[in-house]
Length: 457
Ligand code: BES
Ligand code: ZN
Image 1 (tube, rainbow, N blue to C red):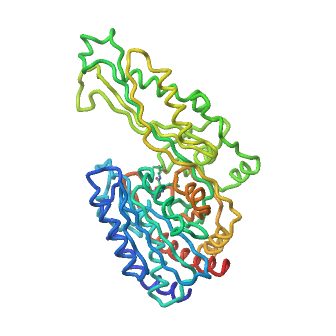
Image 2 (image 1 turned 60 degrees about the vertical axis):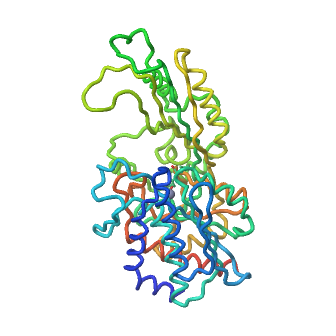
Image 3 (image 1 turned 90 degrees about the vertical axis):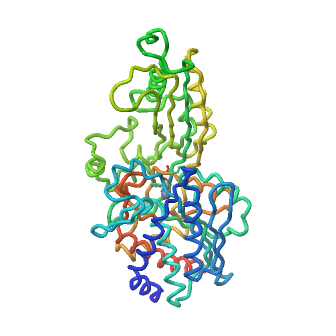
C-alpha cells in the first residue's frame, strides 16, 4: 500500500488535471439534446480505466445512457468489491448564477468549481485514481475489483436495474462501495448508513380550451393556477406534516436510541442555516432539523409553471398549469404506493371545472445499511488513518435508489463513504469540491482496499 500512497501523493496534480478533462464533458442526463455528451463521458471514462491498466472494460449500451462495466481480478481467493458511481450530472441551470462557466472547471483557493465536481464525477474519480495508484505503482492490489458507472442516476437509474438483474453473476461481489454522499462537516469523516427514497410526479390541470382575457372571462371561469396552488398548499398541515391519507402508514418510527444518537451529533444548526441564507428552519412538528432533513419523509414542489412569465404584466387567465412534485421516502415507504396515494389526492380534490393529467415520473427505494458489516469497519479504519478521527455514522436525506436494489438483487450491502459537504452546492450553481477532500478521498480509498482485502482474505 505504501507505494500506492506515494504514487497518489506524487501524481496529485495530474489527477486533478484528469478530473478537469472529465468535467468538461457536458453529461447532462435529463436533457436529450446532451445525449452525445453523456455517451462521450462514458467512452472517456472507459478509456481512462483502460489507460490505467484495468484488465476488462466495457461500455454497455442500454435503451438509455450507457453503463460502464469494468473488472480487475487478481486472485479468486481475495474478496471482491463493486465500486459504483455516476458520470451523469444535473443541468447547470440557472446559468446566470454561475461565477465561472459550469463546464469550464476553475480552481480557486484549493477548490474546484464545475458541475459534477462533487456529484459525482469528482468522487467517482477518487476511486479510479486509487486504483491507478495500485496498478501503476506496482503495488499489489489487495482485492478484486468490479466497477459499474452509470449515466442515469440523476434521472432515476431506469436502465440500471434491469442491467443489474441481467448481470447478477458478473456483478457478484462482497460489498458495494460508493462515494456519492457527504461528510457530516468539514474535517469530520462520515459513513452514511441511511438514504431516503423517492416518488416523483408531475401534475397538469387544464381548464378552458385556450388562454382567456382575464377581464372578459375572469370571475366566471376557474383559473388552473389558482386551483393547483390551492391543491399544493393543501398537501401540508400546520404541523408541516403531509396530509395525503396514508402517507405515513409504512414509516418505521425512529427509535429512542436513534433519536439520542441524532441528538448527540455535533450539529451546528446556526451554521447550517446561515450557509443557506436562512434565519429559521421549518420541520415536521416534534422533529429536529437533522431528523427532519435525513430520516423523515417529505413532500416538495420542485417547479411550477403556467400563464405569463415574461417581463411586465399580461392579463391572462391561462388554459393550463403544471407542477413537479418530489417526495423523499424513508423505510418502509414504497414509491408505487405513495405515488398512488398522491394520485388519489389529486383525483379527489380536482374540481369538476378542470381536467387532471397525472404522470408518475420515477421512484426509488429508501435504504438502511447495517453498520456492523465488515466493510463498514474497514471504511472506519481507513478514515481514521486518513483524518485522525473516528467517522460518524449518519443518515442522509438524498437518494441513491440503486443501493436498495443492489441489496435486493445481488444480496450485498453498500458502504457509503462520501467526501462531499452540504455546502458544495450540488444540483446548484457554483457546485464545487475541495481539492483537499479529493486527495483525502483517494487516500481513504487506497487504505480501505488494503484493510478490507486483508480483513476478509
Ligand atoms: N449524490 C446525490 C445523492 C445524495 C446527495 C446523497 C446528498 C446524500 C447526500 C445523487 O446524485 C442524487 O442527487 N440523487 C437523486 C436521485 C433521484 C433522482 C432519484 C436525488 O437525491 O435527488
Ligand atoms: Zn450523485
